[in-house]
Image (cartoon, rainbow over all chains, first blue to last red; front, side):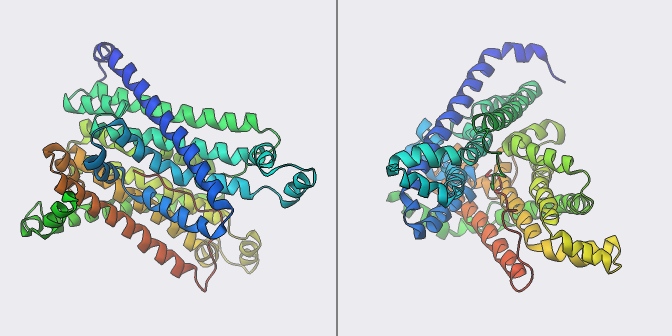
Length: 215
Length: 231
């Protein structure tokens, strides 16, 4: 049964780990977004690079998180960096796929119109292509965020883990209350992120009904 | 690269290939628990998915299952089950079965929905029963996408089976968890290599099967395939 006194006694721990969970997730999705955006811009001009790039991201994505962490630990030790390299690695495929799909879906005549109006490449990207690609990009961020919230837990093995650490402590000290608290909070966090980012996607791009994310 | 040498030595040491903690046994454990979980998950998810996809009723259920599948982390599920089912295999199997269900269910529903409605109607027009329509028309057309769901699920289950070692389970994850605990980087990296290889082979093997099924026959409906969850 749930012992509320145990949960109450561990509130400071739970709050700290919730904060850590949010920080690990936020940094991973943020860095992943910047990285995948840069890479997508690089490969977009050379179409034959797109396939191999996504293939490499796909391989990283397929490697179980525990194994990826294990590969990194001999080099970067039990650090925040190790956790983030792994977490960022998993966001790349999701974000790059949706960025590419979003940018590719911009109609050619819209681009021509922008060119004819004398838009520079950079301005066309920021003012025409990205706004039109926004629904798919936000859909990608949404999936990447929810996925990362789950994966953060595994980094408990190297001393991080956010709420995964709460569950692990519950497991180690045979405290079902902490196990359940960690579980419920993580799932709640994932659902809130899912619904929140879904709402955000519909709100910031009302001109375009969010299509199926393709991811 | 001292580490590479250590890892190579680990792989060539006969002691690591014998006994209950040897690679063959750990590999069999890993494949057995994963295979059983996928089979049981498929036994639940396939009929349900085909029923929902065929009738078009209950799509809310599959949407909810998809959402939950995304929101519930595999690690969390595994640890949650320990107080209920006990350590090791007892907790790992139910967790893995639950994780196997969403991708298979969602893909089955989506792939049936994407079968050309006119083809289905002409089947009915020819006097086929609903069962015949499902077996003779819908399933053959949707098969590559259905297998894509099984592939997604299998990759996810094989990856999560690694985590079973965290709750005192067997399988290849044992090397990683023990390698961490004992600070033995040779074992750690060797385990990671084995696990990564198994996951990639699972993915490649089922992708090849999917391509075979798609070739010649009806191709998979584009855009159905969804990404699985890394675990």
